[in-house]
Image (cartoon, rainbow, N blue to C red; front, side, top):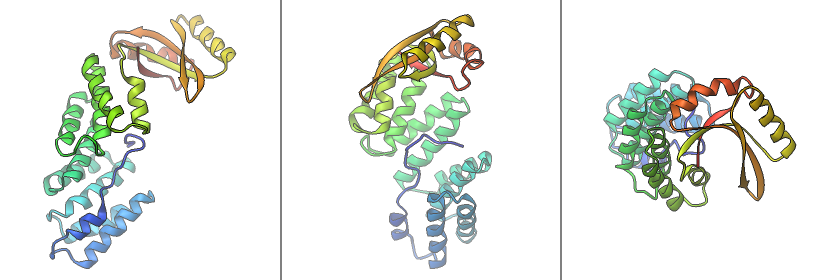
Length: 261
């Protein structure tokens, strides 16, 4: 399971341990610390083992929400999606930390988004925004994803509101740059490649056109360089673009659908 690239997935464990009540033993705190360290170094099996030990000791404490959260993320990263989702749902029922509630909702939103459940995904991301200030992560990822979802539904102006907030509140970040790229779009297109070489771009465009596809080259300035975006089609809906994606991928295997101005 891949989450939105470049976002924070772990809350402050220091704050959590400082707030642990007396019922949490030093041994259990050690397991949670070990789980946090293991997850950050991408040792998912160790993170799962440590959190499982904490949970066996304290299955229903408020502080157990963090353990379920870390274990859920680790299980998802191992590909155990259903088990991971169950852990995240349990974390929501236990924790009262607003930062953790926001993060759990974002992770559940990611899972629904990636499985194509846009309505459910939107619900989770909107829930996340209820527990975090607009200038504080994970508000950036929630607002960005809401913009993407609204574009899928053809609600272009509403999407722009969320993208503009990401650009405004998180100026200079990679996610703000991505939000700016998607803003002011009114249609869908299939991007086959982004090239700096004009000859290569013309060659690929010719191959696509020979296959009966409506290919074009759009110019875009990226980090001071002129990039030639080889794209196919101008689609009113995301579904129409999906219908043609397979044809493009027979020529360019990593082609993808993108919003376009």
